Length: 364
Image (cartoon, rainbow, N blue to C red):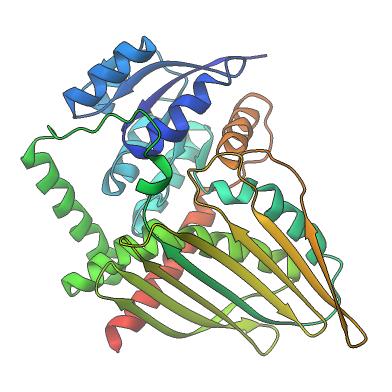
């Protein structure tokens, strides 16, 4: 089995809790050889802990004899780093959002096609065993889909990662932080076609692009399985800038509705993420745990009518961890030519939809 030499760009929360340990725990598939992070505290600690080469910049790391790169930097750097890596002939796994605007994603697609390399986006929920089972179940439903609802209460990661030996970098240069903020604002401007109100910029880059993007992507996969799609946007709003986001759209071809709401609850140590699909005679519900609680089951509940009685089935397909399964799939796409799950084209669809909803919020 081919073992790929991998470097990781960006060593914050998702790298320390998920990508780095998961890659290390797949030694037959990957060899992590290098990391890059602007924080000397972080890169030196992780380098010493895991015996890895450490670089200040991801660009410098790309010349370290890699086969592939994981991009987990702040979001506004994803597109440029993905293009640079593909131009060097590296395979790429990028955290979401792949980019804030579809123009940048088009650059990535062009670089991927020219290089002939694999480009995968980190939508790990597409690998959740409960999601995959629900897709199979939806193929058996004959009646029209009436509604899809998504509601998320997100306390943030702290209650669920406090037990990890995290290294926090407080020494990132101020100029680099300011550069990242300026890049984000400029890229959101391209997405929305205008200088957005600062609260809308925060809402687009936060609740939409950083959080609800997972749910938007998953819902589109579920709609594909149900023979439906998102139609005309109906409503959109941001709550106190980056404290919350809402969107709604009609369902095609049925006269149904999709609604999604995400709310930050930083003073409430509680995480709740639910997706419900309503048909005339049955209901399916996914209940996701905090994403950083590995191998915690996503609940899949099926409710259906039996006359005036209710039958409720709680499915438990597997304890497989989506963050691990997505890395296995990335390896299979690179080495075995397996189809890429979570393509740049899917990311472009997601971000195009978010731009449409954000413009609707701006208009209101």
